[in-house]
Length: 346
Image (tube, one colour):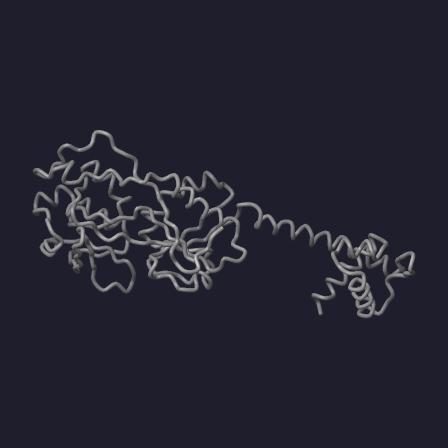
């Protein structure tokens, strides 16, 4: 067998260099008898004697010297190649290919890319933004980020909770023409610009909670899109009411370009996870990405983002009054301990 032959050749070079079976066996971590069998097997495969050996000494035959002289550089080259492969194990370098849901790309991953790249300049991120979850194995992705419910059970999943709240907002211009909704049911009378979460979405179901009260309704409007940026643009242009991640719209609310509606009714919080295929031999670059997310979690403020509510801002003539004088920075991505079965840990 080819594998056995390579092992036997390695054993031969060790004996040839050490000129001792005992020393060569210790160097290779083999027993003396296993080493002797390896040399005997190699000589039988080649049909020549490679070593002259007695109980006291070992000497190379002419064939043995010829094989050693040509084989040693080749094995040294193999060692160098293995050393370069070990760098992928020991050093954070190379490319991480990610498939990321558009909402996660806009609200979670996007805000972190610059900080991660500064911390790990030898790691490149190749991000594919995909509405539908990809098969990361067949399509050669290292990992993916998508809603928890879309992840297969055989994947290793790591929840990402970036205080990923959805806010329901509209532009002041739109609210000049339409009375702000006071309950979720009022949205039936509004033009709701909806985001299609995946290619199979049939209608847009918006879910809300107010204490123990819950509401879920299918909203309708003049535009449905699978691009958060397009939905946001339509909202800013006054086309209708939109529901988008807090990270995308919080600063626009603070600037008065959007107005939060239904303040007492919190939309559903999306639960995104980073997932990969196996916990065995996870590349160091991917481990560093997971560790970075943990660091972000510990460093992130535990308070809500500074969003004007009914208690701090009034919609009067579609102008925000009593807005905060000091604007807090948006909350950075955070993460909770994973509750999924089989979650990886490092």
